[in-house]
Structures are given as structure tokens and as C-alpha cells.
Length: 256
Image 1 (cartoon, rainbow, N blue to C red):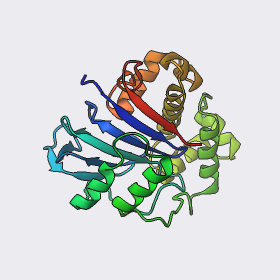
Image 2 (image 1 turned 90 degrees about the horizontal axis):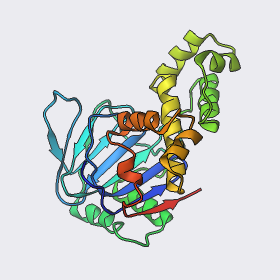
Image 3 (image 1 turned 90 degrees about the vertical axis):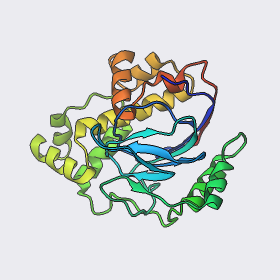
Image 4 (image 1 turned 120 degrees about the vertical axis):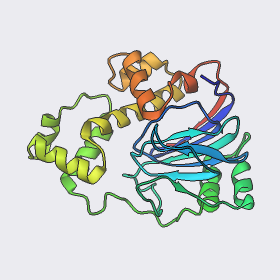
């Protein structure tokens, strides 16, 4: 695997901003929407292993959508936005990867974030402006069945707990099959996959604060580091050690 090199990571409760080299990655999908911009020319992407590679400088990847990115040696900006959160801005998402047209001026504004000393508020405001994301935020849970929303909130509040579908269904007085159907329809992924996503966010949070990968895995409810690493690779396309190894130079800004 290509070394990650020096990178910076901003970690908010419901969004993540990565600035650094593009990691080698396999075809994968994660629950967050992702905006990805190459700072040094175009990047390549594809949506299936049998699909041709397409080339563009900036793309929007909708939530839970398979993708693979190859930016070579270029520095990239990757902004991850959770669709359940009020942090998720109004965007014209589709069911496919959407190329974004960015002027050189807007790319230069994003490039100004590369380097040290940029605080989290300025980084977020720069992304909003340069990527033309609406500042009129909306919560995509509006209109969602409140029983499903309560399950989402319960899972998020206890990421290390091993919930069963039956246990979750009992908390909102539905059958497991009915909850599973509603959850997949309204959240976009099965309950089990959403639980894994929440656990991996907990892994990232603990690892960024200095925990070993084994400690982070246990805090998030995984049986061991190997199980967690396999889930991480399936979700993000590369092993967590590529990000969190002690010898990887990085700057981490955690925003409560």
C-alpha cells in the first residue's frame, strides 16, 4: 500500500475533512456522502470493478454508493457528510457519482487549506464557499418515521453496544421485519451496516485521540482489531493502519 504521507484531518461530530495524499483504495462504499477534489489536476474514479475509469477534477459521491478513486500522487480534499445530520447541506445529489465543475479560483481557495494552522471554522467556511454548498442546512430526517429516527439516535448514542434487530424493534414496538424494511427504505442501508458505520466512526474518534487500534476496536464493540480492520477496509477501501500508524505524519483537529 502506498504510504499516506503527511495529512490533516478535521473531525466534527457529523462531518470529516481530509487533506493529504490519496490513499490506495479498493472499490468500497460508506454511509457518508463524499466530495472529493484533486488539488493537482484530474483524478480517476469508477463505480464498479467492471466499469471504465472516468476522469474529472472534482466529484460528489452520494451516500452508500460504490466507488473507487485514484488520484495518483496528487493532494486531495475529501469532505465526508453524514446524511442524517443537520451538518448535511442542501445539495443536488443523484444516485450516481456527479462531476463538479470548479474554477481555478475555487480550487486555489481549497488549496489554501493545505498547510498548517488553518482553524476548523475557517476550513468549513472555505469548503462551503468554494464548493458552493448551501448554508441553508436541512436535516434529511425531516419527514422520517420518528420510530426509525429514534433507532438511529439509539445506535449512535451507544456505538459499542451489540444491538440485535429484535432488541431495537422492541424499543419502538415494531416487528423486526417491519423495522428492517422501514430502516432500509428511509435510511438507505440495512440496520447492521448502519451499526458498523457508527462503530467505525467511534474507532476513528478513539484512534485520533491516541488509542491503539486494538483499544479503539474494543471501545467500538468489535471483538478484536482484526475484525475491525476488515470492516474498515470494506467501508473505506483501505486498512486503518494506513491512517493511524504512529510513523504516519499527521495533524488532527477534533471539534466537539
